Image (tube, rainbow, N blue to C red):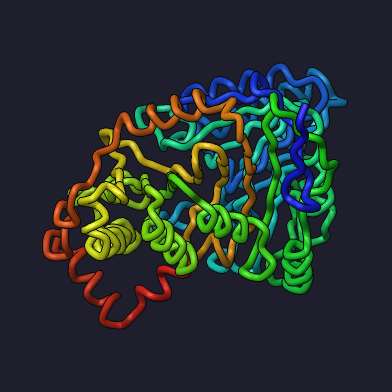
Length: 445
């Protein structure tokens, strides 16, 4: 059997195709995650930007706590962003944040569960925990979703993401090892379920050291031999622009594409290097498909009949970026070399990320492929190499499901201009552009 050696010194795991699964909806993701937590026998590790104090968040936390009470030896740890957990929602009144819920649960149960707050930078605006991946026993459940009502489709609305399940003990060990060794053990990381937490100001020095440590970190583990009847999965992690293995791999995948690129991003705000490689790919004859959310499917979108908030201008700013890109590539759109697919489904929102190159290499990631992800946040991804296309049917079914609610743009003129926007949005965007604040916003949002 021929053997493939991949990805230099990074760990590589040989996965049987029947151990790789794709879930197709937020609801099925929620059901799978809860069932896995309830049936866990050895460990539960949950990592997300946030675990919200709402019905869905409480359902997940309750399931974890009940599992812990049934089996006190169960190894359970939850990691969320330090800053995000200690504030209310953007635009809402000042609140204690989700940390109050974590402390409430810890007081209520006999066996408590640590909820670690991970501070990637001293201020949230300059970097957050955007690492993804849940591990239950020997199964990795990978999604860009956080844990709340809309991501888990608990009520009427859902936020559409991607949901992949890989059953593989060594890969699960690798991801848990990174969480424990590179995050939890660092003195900058504290248990939000405990009272008397230090302030961010008190942690300023160790947070700076933590950021440096993260910049040098990588996934550890064995480099398995991958046979022709298997697929290779390589976990990648990165933070900051320099020596970022995940950024480098995204750039390399785009640069080496030969036939086709499928790029998913919720916010059309590509880093310059990504935009450059996309343009180069089109010029060398690679068909490029961009799947992006309609502005009304953006998680920052506020309907015109709702109270105005400045954050509601972001979806329009992203649409302006997309229209500029489409206009510059109008001839490629007309020829079919470039396809732009806008996702919209009723009042639901879109949060898909990822890259599929030549129907062989798939990057599963929480990386939004924007300047913030590129330079500020702690990001990771799972690189799937499948030259024999064992997973082709599963990925094709996934993208058929995604495209069910997309519309292909045939001309840049189909996208609205600033003059079509609500008056308050127009005034806001004109001010932002006049003061050149849009350049800063595109870097940090």
